[in-house]
Image 1: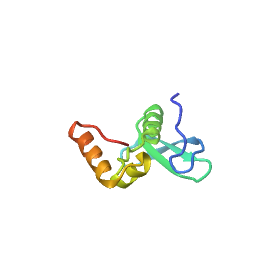
Image 2 (image 1 turned 135 degrees about the horizontal axis):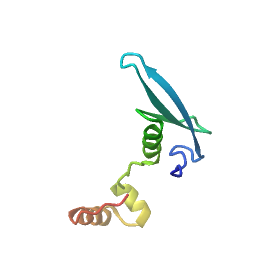
Image 3 (image 1 turned 180 degrees about the vertical axis):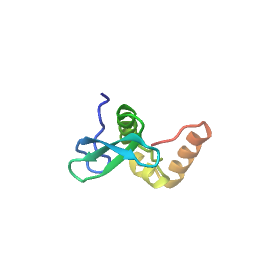
Image 4 (image 1 turned 120 degrees about the vertical axis):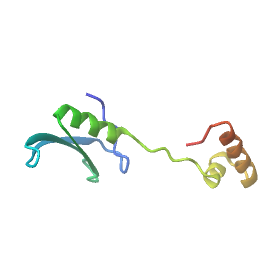
Length: 101
């Protein structure tokens, strides 16, 4: 099984809550897998046709983190540069297809 990343909000590990439910309209069983943080309660769930698909999807979703691009003021703090130098540097990186995250 794929290792879970820590909670993106508070850090502790999450735990998996697999469940099954029936879709009365389709007359089929489907599986819902939920991940929940022990500490803050943040949770995410995915539903699929099989238990394995539901588990794989919820783990992938939990482990996916959005990248946040660093802005000029944060870049200044990180590098100790002034506004103009930070702006030029970030602009030059962007022109060649790079970014600071």
